[in-house]
Image 1 (tube, one colour):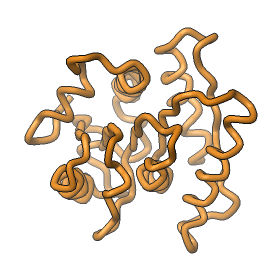
Image 2 (cartoon, one colour):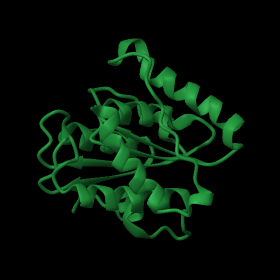
Image 3 (cartoon, helix red, strand yellow):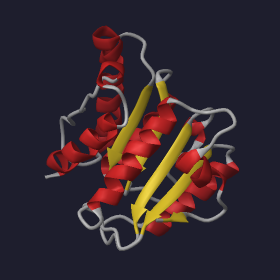
Image 4 (cartoon, one colour):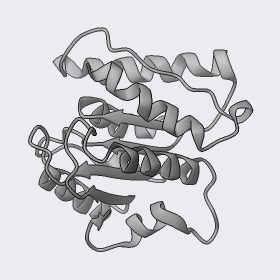
Length: 187
């Protein structure tokens, strides 16, 4: 179900960019669960294969739940320009130093009962204390599966991915607003 849930999210991300400018890749995890950092290892493996397939392209990692945790952890990879973590699973003490020099946005549903919006907000605060450029967006009445208000989830994904791949100077848009807000943006 998790892989199926990401299909419309990835289509939304691709819709924000000209198709000749984007390579859409979906990393598959070899094992279920976090088991000894397996999802992170699989994410690095996929990032290592990408230059052979597409060249040295800028990358925005998008991950949901455990995949959001893996995406945030893999932010230090040189090709990663930004991270979009959707309803990420962020246990207490999750590291943030790898976000240095990157931009990340965490999007969480207000009514998520699987992963914690509060844990995400705590993570964002700790990452900002470590000087990360990170923001948080909360989808009103949103759930973990991104089924409630799915069109808003998809528009948010499209907007943030486009902004992460094409950053403006000075920064503007939803990503910049999320990264500069003192509290999570509520949509």
